Length: 300
Image (cartoon, rainbow, N blue to C red):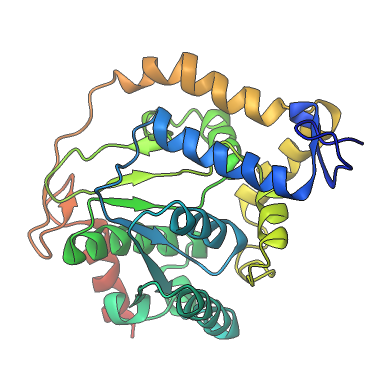
């Protein structure tokens, strides 16, 4: 295989693009995809500080790596979930990355905020661990951004993540979730920061290749609670489809964003108010995070 750009020996083939690249040109291709995502959706400007949510995995650290090299003023935010050795290693990986590049890292503990780590939340609520974990992460990301003066939070969700989320929402016709399926969610309240996903144009395999070529040290293992998650099953289904028809994930996601999402986005959104307990944004009197904290407190 020859590199599409320079004609030299290629090191990675991208079937969905019907192209192959040498290592340097692939890295530039990757960065260009991030640049295009930021430009197309006006995710943030050069003058804005960006809070990058980092888990220690390849996607979030690859994103942070690109934004640092592009000259954006960034800080990392790591949420310590308290999931045994997995969280210990994840935090240490993020700390090493931040230290090596001389950039700030903010660490927030779920246990301190909710009253218990994710394993205890799972036991107390008797719900899938991703439920309480996801709720806590969304809340704490927004709160940290507000407290530290960041107008936008960037996450490492890639094409595979977004296609799997869309697949699940369509499978169950979760029409309340479909309007929020977007690479860039605007602020709809003074206490809600913007949320963006600059990697949505790039697949998980492409992000892994970028992290390898950039020699980024990242957590390889999945979260121990991820086994059996419906999102994993949805990814496996889409992977089989992608193998048979390269570009299927891209066509599914981008077709929705361009043709279907505008229809669902026109639906009226519920009115937002400030939680009577913590002051964060909610649709009710007390937000779901405070209710979760109350449930944990009663059971522990």
